[in-house]
Image 1 (cartoon, rainbow, N blue to C red):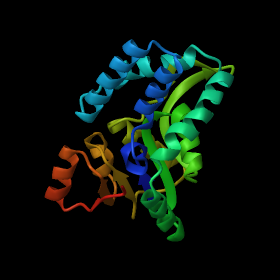
Image 2: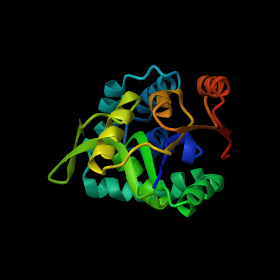
Image 3: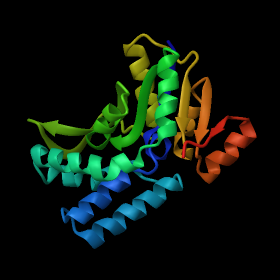
Length: 217
């Protein structure tokens, strides 16, 4: 069984769920709209340039989780799925997932976006395994802190290697699909790297290395 690994944001989705969740909170009046939007946009630009300080970003992004009950957050997330995530769904991405299912491959999503945001999206896509940045919970409520290595850049490789060891699997025959230069460490680790609607830097690198480039939009 080969692993078929997928980035989520701007790969399987036509958009970034992390940034979109911030926008959703702004529209709902959950956070200070102007201040939060400015920070959310700034962090997103840093991410796209490959310059994001992941710990600084997570301190910002997880604060709203710690400020509200898990029950209320769940209600908001259900609205977020219907209003925001569903329009981001890509038929070609879902067809690609099905191709790998039909081939008997093990599907996995690896994402820097935290599990609160992305867990329900992976379930919606029918992907049984997700490695995501893990927000800490104590007695069922979010603390605003992170547990484990953030699932970002080299951290994706670290988390994946641990999963492989735990499940006695290897990267033989493995695929990884991503849009972002931030995912270069994992793209270099798999047997079949694929650039999906890549950013400018990843697109140039994919051309240089003769990696396949897909358009799922």
